[in-house]
Amino acid sequence: VQLQASGGGLVQAGGCLRLSCKLSGRALRDYAMGWLRQAPGKEREFVAVVSWSGDATYYAESVKGRFTISRDNDKNMVYLQMSNLRPEDTAVFYCAADSGFTASAKPQDYDYWGQGTLVTVSS
Image (tube, rainbow, N blue to C red; front, top):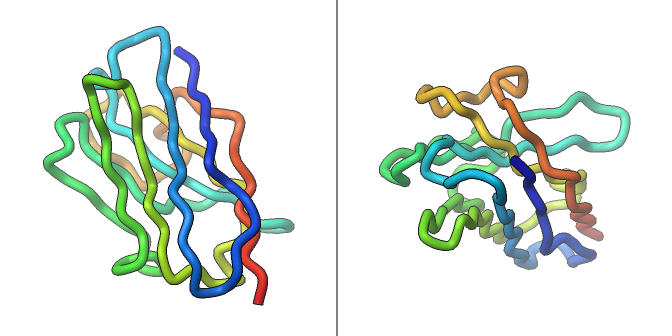
């Protein structure tokens, strides 16, 4: 299984970005899919997760109402739409696949990770 994240970049506070993640090697529907991030000097933290079917989503409190996770199982793609970005959202964002069915918020539950894409929000 390989994950390729893209879509990061430099954006001003209040702006928007959409991150994309392509899974290859297996069917996307075999996994719950999450986005996690790591800011400089901080531990990796959960951002959002979507169940294998797309029916259930969960978000970190810090991004609720601003970020939306979605998936397209036919295209093997996962997305993270981010709006009203803040400087504290600056981080490397990772997509990750969880072969369990718990749609977990714990980084240690994810089996596969992409390489990360950098999001920088300027004030």
